[in-house]
Amino acid sequence: MRTGYFNSLLFALLTSVSIAAAAAPSVKPEVNTPPVGLEVSAKEQSGKIDLNTADAVVLQRELSGVGEAKAKAIVAYREGNGPFASVDELLEVKGIGKAILDKNREKLEVH
Image (tube, rainbow, N blue to C red; front, top):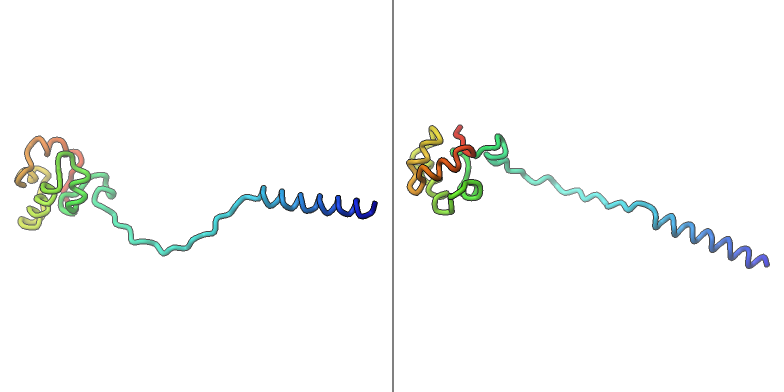
């Protein structure tokens, strides 16, 4: 009878340990990764795209009606003529007309 009593206690102890282990919250190990250099685009700073700092990829992605060729034309114009003085100067870029400028005017700024 003593062995049966001892076995019952041992079983109860092992069962409670396994239940406690299963009920414990799982903790994910922290992974310490070095910070990656964050690029802050012209859009993230003020919510608008700065024509004088945005690259062709940002212009293509953010502006309506502007594809790869027009985005590259905007950057080429800026590099050849200096920074934009106003958003309206975008009309000087080949392929950019009044309709495209009007669709995107609220998204654009110059600094």
